[in-house]
Length: 114
Image (cartoon, rainbow, N blue to C red; front, side, top):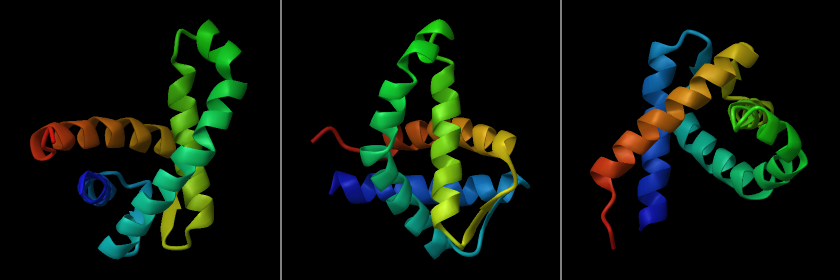
């Protein structure tokens, strides 16, 4: 049940952020649900590989390179989805930072500790 709640929180957060940010576009709310699913799959399979490969630069930048990895995950999700468009790397970076913040805030409010 927590998986579905997290999926909906991510989809709602992405939908709201796409209305605020002019560089991120979704065709519909259904597209944001697909976005949340695709991003979740990529975070499970691709992100650990990128994190391991970029560990030296992440250590040198004191963890700030993880923001770049998150932006790359957004761009990779954009590549796999026709119903989503991100206008560039900086928009993906801003979107990923704000998505993390908003999703974390919503998760603390709506998720139970079961």
